[in-house]
Amino acid sequence: MKKLAAALLSCIALACAAQTPATAPPVAARAWILVDALSGRTLGAHAADDRFEPASLAKLMTAYVVFTALRDGKLAADQPVVPSARAAKAAGSRMFLEAGKPAAVRDLLRGLIVVSGNDAAIALAEAVAGSEPAFVELMNRQAARLGLRDTHFANASGAPAPGQHASARDLAKLALALIDDFPDRYALFAQKELTYNGIRQANRNRLLWSDDAVDGLKTGQTEAAGYCLAASAKRGERRLVAVLLGEPSDDLRASDGQKLLNFGFQAYETRRVYAKGKPVAQPEIYKGTRSHVALGFRRDVWLTLPRGNFEGIQAVLDLREPLVAPLAAGEKAGIMKLMRDGVPLAEFPVVALEDVPVAGFLSRGWDTLRLMVHSAP
Image (cartoon, rainbow, N blue to C red):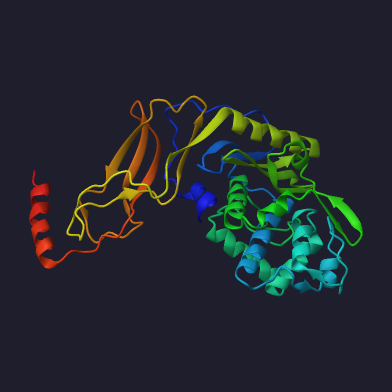
């Protein structure tokens, strides 16, 4: 995964043992998680790896698979889709498709995301994969690729079904992947209402009205799942994602989601500590066409800490020594450790910023002698 979603998965650790984490406000959800998108740090969580029925938050993966099909040219936004009778008769929330009456993919996506249409979910599944069961296979394949270990889908709509489950942590990862992998599609999640077939419906994500910083993502609700929410907000450079599962009411879903987002922005700060591609060291390298190699980071490195905790941080570079060619750009060459008072805060992989091919025979021979001296006791 890349960019925002990659930050959640690729940072080696954010131990943050040198400071006391801020305490999140109490919420009524059975499970929840709050994540800073830039650094990938979890700012608070409860039962985040437990498996629950996802309700319509499953449609986040439905959207991800459809966006992938659009990106790969297997589907077009203006392509007409003829809803099947099965799609048009879907129970639960609907955009009110009519069997046999074509609808454009872009309209079906609005129906899926804005008003959580189960009919839109089935129609899109059939358009992408020929049938809903075949589409569900694609959903679970993407879940495995994204590392969603506690998630399994049984349908495209999130309707109750045996074996369908997800964790709050997995749904946060999925939300981040949507934001990062499909920025050109993400604005759909901020749309507040949809009028289709003469029927006007509002987005059930009430935070879109109460907080201008909130720009997505999705709500869900069934009797077994309770009221669920995946919400994202951006203030300045920072973006937070909150997932709440099993809230007892719509009111608490909205108020608890707002509480978590406010807590994350107010209690923590995120700073860029290293810039992508900027050298942080140029150590010696042996047997290469260069005598030194520039080391740095493949992406911007962000660190999230409780407010007021950025003073006194020290950086320690732990190199994989000795460095010997060939060394490819992007290849790991060490670890940058951020410390305070000798206690680790975070670790990030340091990579080569340039290729260093193997040198000629004479240079390699000379460096072999130098390496012998280097490794001598």
